[in-house]
Amino acid sequence: PNPFIQGSPTVASYGSQARCISSSARDETQGGSPDTRQELRAGTAASFSPTSASCADGNTLLYRMSHDLTVLSMADSPTGQCSADYLFSPAYGMALTQSNIQNYVNVYNFSWGVIRIQVPAVFNSAAEDVYRGSWSDSNLGGYDVNYFSVSANTAKDLPDPSLPFTVNALMLQAGGMMTAEGLSYVLFAPSEVVHSIARANSTVPPKLFLPRVGVMAYVLAAPSYAFMFRYKEPSADWSGSPSNVPCMSTLMEMNASVANCTTLGNWAPQITRLDEVGNLQELADSVK
Image 1 (cartoon, helix red, strand yellow):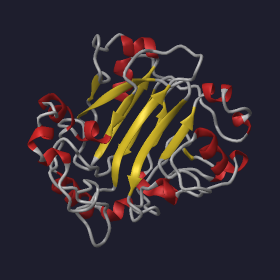
Image 2 (cartoon, rainbow, N blue to C red):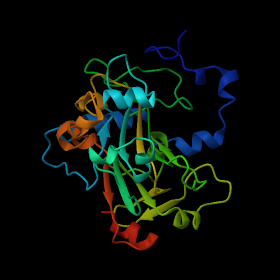
Image 3 (spheres, rainbow, N blue to C red):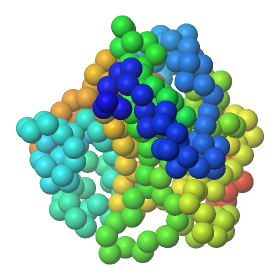
């Protein structure tokens, strides 16, 4: 049967397939049990309301792709609609391929900073034997989104830092990465600084301990193209879906397509640039 229909067995339920999933992959991504994460969300649902007074935006804007940019980028989307699978925050290198984008949206020269993420419940193909379907009022054990990640993308023709550039939800849910409130953090810093703490040939970004919040955080090299947030098949009923951000027809209108406290509540990733810090210890100490 199709493994992506609610109640169907996943590939991990078949012995021959399960043996292909290495123990290291399970260890790297396994967080608390899915039921525990669902109970956490259900118990604090009011704090995730788009009108929640506790939500605070960062100093960096995050956009949903306009329809013309969706087509140009060949992003997943039904014909004639904006993509609901991505949010992004553009860096200076995007202007090299998207002419005049800086005239319509904020474009950033990322250096030092932190991304705070309310981690969604996602499908773990390495550990779950039954696919539980999308979250809804009638399926409280379902997933907010099948897959979620944040990537620090490098612009074409600009120097490639040659470092791991993506962190996904399962990595953020792993032991020691997420607070009791379901929050995880991703740091970013200049590529030469990240190289100084990266392990040779590692396939995952380096980590730092955040003393003021008591969890670890991955460290990505600051992007020259964009921070790209990937939402694969979000639940239609989930308030954190990019589909809740207004869809604009053209790039020129995209300043009305902002993912923030108004549109996504606490589910909106919060990017805060911290250009005043000068080293990794100051960066880690600044997160609270």
